[in-house]
Amino acid sequence: MNQHIAESAQIGADVKIGFNVVIMEKVIIGDGCQIANNVVIYPETKIGHHVRIDDNVIIGKRPLSSPRSIFKVEDNMQAAEIGDMCQIGANVVIYVQAKIGNNNLIADLATIRENVTIGDLNIIGRNVTIENFTNIGNRNKFETNAYITAYSEVEDYCFVAPCVATSNDNYMARDKERFNHFKGVTLKTGCRLGVNVTVLPGKVIGTDATVAAGALVTKDLNEAAIYAGAPAKRFRDVPESQKLSNNLDK
Image 1 (cartoon, rainbow, N blue to C red):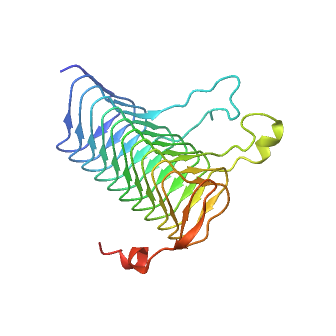
Image 2 (image 1 turned 45 degrees about the horizontal axis):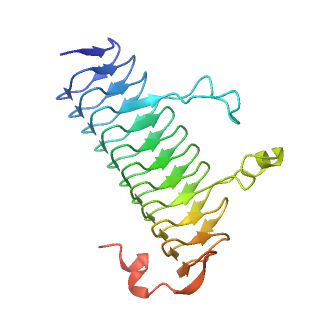
């Protein structure tokens, strides 16, 4: 079996490792993990117990930096950390200095950038991108092709439908003034974004707010109301039966 496992790596009990796996220096892998083929785990990465990692996954990748990049790569970035009982699909890339909690599902082709923190029991769907300096709470669901821009905050129990797009730069890469105004989106607990919703930089989606498919969010949205259109406008209140407080056991 063709593998490279550094002598300083710590591999727990009952770990299954596939072909062409590279595990670099001082990596720590907990008990009962399953690591499939062609996986690369960069130095000092910490992986919890009973984690499943599918084919072609890269964990702990350092970001690239163009001479034109606004933010430069730090010299001493901390290793990536993945909690217990996570499932990581094929071709996922998780960058250095990402911290991922327990019981998360990260589906095929997803990308988790550096300086991202993710809590517990989240579902991050196929080809989802979570950009850098983003904090995500617990029990959120991001469906296929959703894009969460850098410098965003996502609380708990949020639902982000397929192809939702968010942004953080009102100046669209022109005028140095933009450096003072980078700001991602804020998704408050229990908010829901429908298919193809677009959220402009710095906007706050209130607790239990619901945004209909195809809407364009150009201003902060109040809690527990339904919004639709471009620009998104208040349509009506969220029905009591749909509020998070009435669905926590479902």
